[in-house]
Amino acid sequence: MAQPKYLSGDVAAINEFIDKFDVFLFDCDGVLWSGEHVFEGVVETLELLRSRGKKTVFVTNNSTKSRPEYKKKFEGLGIPADEDEIFGSAYSSAIYISRILKLAPPKNKVFVIGEAGIEQELTTENIPFIGGTDPSFRRDVTVEDFNGLADGSLLDPEVGCVLVGLDWHINYLKLSHAYQYLRRGAVFLATNVDSTFPMNNNFFPGAGSISVPLVHMTGQEPVALGKPSQAMMDAIEGKFHLDRARTCMVGDRLNTDIKFGIEGRLGGTLAVLTGVNKKEDWEAADAVAVPSFYVDKLSDLRAAAQ
Amino acid sequence: MAQPKYLSGDVAAINEFIDKFDVFLFDCDGVLWSGEHVFEGVVETLELLRSRGKKTVFVTNNSTKSRPEYKKKFEGLGIPADEDEIFGSAYSSAIYISRILKLAPPKNKVFVIGEAGIEQELTTENIPFIGGTDPSFRRDVTVEDFNGLADGSLLDPEVGCVLVGLDWHINYLKLSHAYQYLRRGAVFLATNVDSTFPMNNNFFPGAGSISVPLVHMTGQEPVALGKPSQAMMDAIEGKFHLDRARTCMVGDRLNTDIKFGIEGRLGGTLAVLTGVNKKEDWEAADAVAVPSFYVDKLSDLRAAAQ
Image (cartoon, rainbow over all chains, first blue to last red):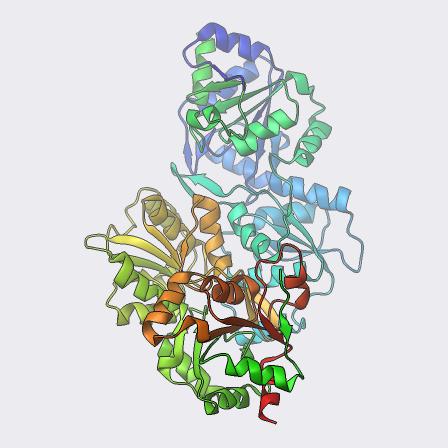
């Protein structure tokens, strides 16, 4: 496969790159920041792109925050962003359930494994749910749970869907509930299936590592609503009316971000080396996706301003 | 592949079957009981076999109990059994670590994901460990955890091995610790890798569903010390000095019990239909293992007494 063009330090190439696109879709974790640490020069890089008339959209597989919460995170980190520029996998999942899946009563409830971001986006779309951050699911499993789950008496007959995202309070009780609903035919959705989650220059269990026990138990794969799912790209296109040929996806992961851009037939993809994947990963013979451009870090694009 | 001989109701075939063997290795969950419910006639069946001079050994992948605890469980359920007849995956794991792995200081500690059974068997073999049932790991993850795990300051430099078994208190904190130890080169062991755990005539997440997030994150498979691992068979043979040709494995799972007996070149395997697998599973073209005999339930062997 053709290898990506390296832009860092090459002012002419960076200017040519920026001129090729009207819209930049940005992954967040590993691109703009890692955990609570914003990478140096990110704010100025976004300013530069906006000052050259580019639309910026933040596309994140992180389902723990809703769009309003995400906006607060951006503000707290000193990165200017509108709520409308933010597109997360919790939002994408809520849209999918309400507009594509269209669950009908009496099986229209969602059993959620995940944090508040999912709950808020489901609420916005008027989707009933149980689980999530409910304290009655954040506890140890008991003998009564085993009995009531085994005979079904503890299960809500209205649940028709299991939605799994990153859950810092994952436990045996939630996995057991989700498994029983899936055994009874509930639709299996995942906000995203990233195996790890970048934070503080290291990695932690990602949403895909929360859903994988259920995959293992049921032999079923979830429909994933985050990158690289094209359901997410279609929703972004529908919302922003972007010209795919003039759009560039910027990210750190080949198997989510870069694959997402390539399968979405965007005009280009830009890899940054501040997250999960390294140069060797796309140079490998079995590379899952190869970007069209790469920089060491996002702020290398600032050279264009000089 | 040759299909198994069906014994239920066929007195002559049952007598011939019993006479072929000196030792019967029994899986427990799904064969003798499900959860706290002992299947009818199990006690009498074991009595029948013992009265005909057979050795009975209980081989279980359930790592949550040590051998002394297992003996208590047998007693509580009214099933006579000696501690020496019990061979669990927690015991098998402790033996593997102390006699095969032989971890040397300063990297000889084990990080445990699992219940007290593992801890007790590790203690018996004088293996130092952290994690397990320690309340300081049974809590929500905090910002301090993320920081200390990311920079390594919260990690014990003496940990050289991660051992994962069934843990009813699995959480994000434990998975994050285990992941960091594995990233730093710790040996990855699993007491067993059953995806589900039979209880109350239903299924719950098994040990394999506790370790699979770590497999997913690291791309590494653990060395499994339960069935069908032949490390367990070798340990059983060493302890009981059995003649494999005169030994029969009795179980409900094709991919653990029956495979265990076949790969161990035992004289025979007996499947029971009171647990995970059904007749269709070994009749399938891609059957993972085909038993040599089967009965609807273990107590069908009692017909031999008539």
